[in-house]
Length: 136
Image (cartoon, rainbow, N blue to C red; front, side, top):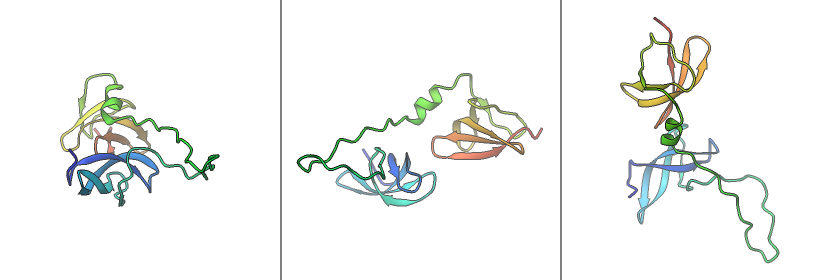
């Protein structure tokens, strides 16, 4: 059951991706207004299918052509694909791509990129955070 303040996967018009959104308004048990947890854009709920900006070809009798379905991969599936036991996050530790990390505030996530200057990008369920590492 969807409720205000809950999370749903929806197509973000700014990011142009299917991402996690926070529900702002519900009508008849369906979300109608959502906020992207990545870019914080507020927009109408658009379901979990990607939109295409390409012009549509008209059918022979005016019917809409079938759209290819976008594959949506959930956070749990992405996390399960990472191997190893979770390590607690500490700015003193050094992390590598695909390592599973337990953060005291953001929860469990995985390293999606290692940046220059001692920073690491970690994908959590609700957001992607840029944190420091290797400072010990």
